[in-house]
Length: 128
Ligand SMILES: [Zn+2]
Image (cartoon, rainbow, N blue to C red):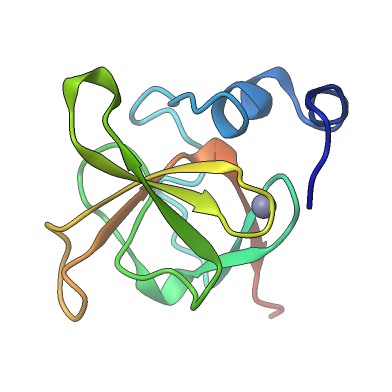
């Protein structure tokens, strides 16, 4: 899915645009989904693609929603050497929205920690 910068600006809030299209980062502990413990799925705020399941969410204590696994094929990985750090950026495979970064200090079974901006995600709870 390819939209122009202008189209993204029109469909996203300023904060969503800053983070997902300009690779920004929300303040730690500011995200509305950080302590969300409901069962459900997490979707790309830009295009709606389902990215993460609540079953893989855990509290990493880092201030951002964290998951130990992404849904198969939904997330793409890019080397990020900005800010003097060597990190792996994660983006939505469908629309290239910046999501956050993935680290290798997560819990088992994967050992991965997907550190994601709340702003990049929309949550859909499982119907009760
Ligand atoms: Zn997307």
